Amino acid sequence: MTIDLQFDRDHLWHPYTSTSNPLPCYPVVRAEGVEIELEGGQRLIDGMSSWWSTIHGYQHPELSHAAKQQIDAMSHVMFGGLTHEPAVELGKKLLAMTAPKLNKLFLSDSGSVAVEVALKMALQFQQGVGQLQRTQVLTIRGGYHGDTFAAMSVCDPVNGMHSLFADSLSKAHFLPRPTTAVGQPLTAADEQALATGFADHGETLAAVIVEPLVQGAGGMHFYGSAYLERLATLCQQHGVLLIFDEIATGFGRTGKLFAYEHTSVVPDILCLGKALTGGTMTLAATLATDEVAAGVCASAAGVFMHGPTFMANPLACAVANASMAILQRGDWQQQVDAIEQQLTAQLAPCQQLAQVTDVRVFGAIGVVETKRAVDVAAIQQEFTRLGVWIRPFGKLVYIMPPYIISPQQLSQLTQALTRVLALPSVYQASS
Image (tube, rainbow, N blue to C red):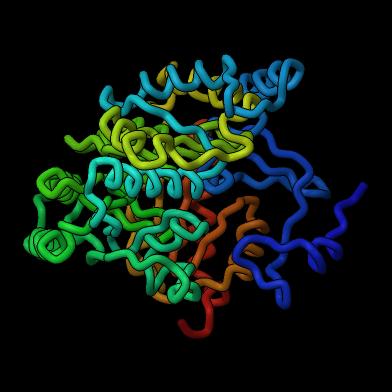
């Protein structure tokens, strides 16, 4: 049976795509390892890890076995008043992998919801400890935290994807995007911005939320740990909770298991998702300290006011346990280090291209920033012709491959990227 692309075009709404003039969609029939197979047999090397989630590759036998074994026993049961072994085991694994002070775990069903949960925890905590005036949230420009309403409110308000909803969102406070570079001391500009932000809002803030060191879909921007260390000090001084959104960076992507491990900072609340199940199905987690949990439960409600239908879904938890077991074997560290070295060497020539303004690498993340926005339809046609799957946005063309990618496969990705970015036809006429 062939995939009905006309029905897809006429009726199925794809992410960030117009239904009036939809972008082309490529029909996938299977995926295995680091390759996506299209209808007709063409294979594409996946440079995106299916939006950064399939870190172990597609159809990993251990993940597939865990899913098959669990579905024969129980695919789902409500978590209200019930529990099950996959959730308990996943809790043990996650608490063992993260900092000791993160001792409470809330399992939800997507990264955006994990952020919603974190923000609600922070607000309810402040009520519970009697800080009723603390109802506001601070973040930094250039961030992306998801597409649901509270998550949108802390995404970049100008250059982000959600400016259309500005009048309907809760009003967050924004600091300038950090200028402190990776491995460098805190800049005077960042020191001043942080001081001003807390002087202006420190007494009414419930929480600060940031993506540590790597801002993802808001601009693929990297910044230094000195910024986070100063931010954490100010949060502690002012009684403000610190939330790290590691949905994109968690589970090894930056070269550490979690990005906060590049710093001396441990957040009060940590959001995880994407790679949690190795990209097999949706699951997310919000971890918090005992202090946060106690404050939440001391509020008027006496309980945390959140409970998704598919919270701690046994099938997803079982697969997540298998994914965590793969990580615990430790191969990811060597894999990510090798990817970082290869990306650094092989993307460097892009800096010489006329339309390129910057090339940057952090762990298994390679980013080429262009002077003009790319034409997504045109550039993806060129990429697929060369046998690779790379999906850019705006002026950012990036690679975040599965950790199991071979050097030869990664070379095919970087060579295709360098070759295609040299073509004038892949850029928008103006931007």
